[in-house]
Image (tube, rainbow, N blue to C red; front, side, top):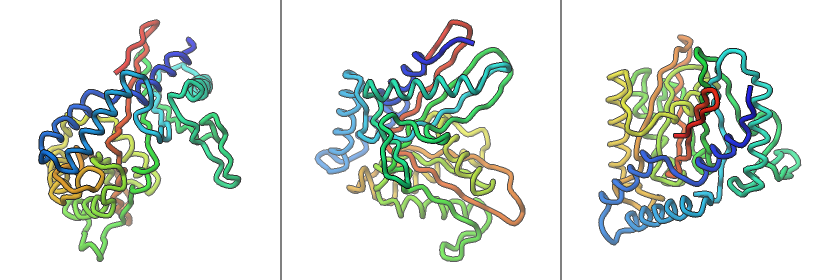
Length: 290
């Protein structure tokens, strides 16, 4: 098992300083939909200038470089302990190189570790053993502003008039978007999990955000709901940064989970415009980034 530390540092650098092509394309499309001279268009134009500067200078896209969330899909026989050690070492090094800001604060003492390393939950690392001989490591940097406006609903919800069906799911998600009011650094991306328990719902609502914006959900009903939620969120007029306009979200991704009959949760993870996610694949000595 090779040492991947330097490759993981590069994965972090790419995630922090260079938006994925599908995200940048969605933001550029959004600019053209806003009125010239409007606050909404100005906000998006400023965002895109920031994206270009960050890429050219390898500096973080946002001052909040977020919680690093790693998903490691590894072949049989790889040591998850050693992989975690390499991820931790890479996070420390990336922080020293200023690809990440030191963000790990002890909740009880309020002391910042200065390294982006905390207990076993910071950074967040998920492992999944897979078939084959290729390792795939995915990274998302989840900012605090968008994390703060995430929400979970238990249906039925009488206040919303939301029952235990997709119509109820729609009402819950749109309520979360309305309550965010741009505070999650809109335009955002919605990760939605239907079902599960409270914990698995939050995990899955983040996992689904690793999908590309331009893909299509294999379930026709969920694909239709993703398009509808995007369209109706944008009809609210909240707009970029809450300034008003036509672009409140640039996409929605939904996953359905099995659940107990007694529970029906709808979990929404809101991602900001700085949709920082990247993927690395390792097969033998060959390493590729997306």
